[in-house]
Amino acid sequence: MDYFLSEEQEMIVEIAQQITDERIIPQRAELDEKDEFPREILNSMAQADLFGVPIPEEYGGFGGGCLDIVLALEQLGRGCIGVATAFAASALGIYPIIISGSNELKEKYLPSVASGEKFAAFGLTEANAGSDASGIQTTAVLDGDEWVLNGTKQWITNGGEAQIYTIVAITDRKRGARGASMFVVEEGDAGFSCGPKEKKMGIRASSTTELIFKDCRIPKDRIIGRLGTGFITVMKTLDSSRPGIAALGLGIGQACVDEATVYAKQRVQFGKPIISFQAVQHMLADMAIQLEASRALVYAAAKHIDAHPKDMSKVSSMCKVMATDMAMKVSTDAVQVMGGYGYMREYPVEKMMRDAKILQIYEGTNQVQRNVIGQELNKEYSRK
Image (cartoon, rainbow, N blue to C red; front, side, top):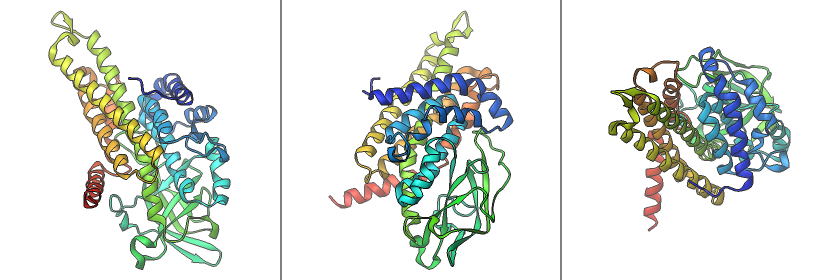
């Protein structure tokens, strides 16, 4: 369908498409098999200025909006959402600075991320703080001109690979949600280390580790925003980034439709291609319908967020839920269409099905997103 993209947006799609076809797809199986971080591919993205898409122009970026990053991630996700997640996580890690950081922090950190010279990561999740972010145990205590961080973050994407980390820590437990603040921690800061890479079911090309803080001292001016505004920044960050996760769902959904349809045209049973059988046609038709419906919602949500950045929670959650549930369903159906071949590593849909599952989990499980949508509906109808 024609979504009437601008020339700049068409260019973003074309660049991301080229990198996907020429660099990601040929290497995705090997990266998955080896649990290998795709540094060379990310360098190619940096050379193509993709890392600058969400960064404001005054800090060396493209100054793109939500739809721009969605368009890039959809294409990258079509190739491999492990690689795409490594790219997306850098944007996630830098969003808190874009949203709430001082001019000094923006000038210090944004240009190097926009150029792809440095990667970023976002540190929220802990062993006892996943969907319930209020369970955070990591603390930050002011000691003279330094903050001292202690605690452990878990399942952090780009852990061990990023140079810039935006971290949520408790600065005043008595104040509850208003007692959390955000900080910038740099690779090499004393008292900061990363655990070993986690062994994952899918998105194996992305690095996932613990972040460990043992009397980690950072300068006082590395606080992001005002003291006690950490959770506000977290919520704004996740609202901004969830359409990107939805876009990864679109990418993997498109790849599954492509692979299953091509296979169904080539696979011959009972003397004719299986695509000629109504049972297979209906499965492919449902996959295509679900994909296009999800794409329409994700693009509409992204345009809404670009036009109304203060009113994004509901639509951000809606598009994340719909597109990622679609990705899981469509990838499962792609394996089914391809039968025993689909279950083999020789064909990419096996990997796509493993990868798709994480989309329903990270950056807020889809069950929590449904809670958000329900709460927003409750607020809206209470005002009527």
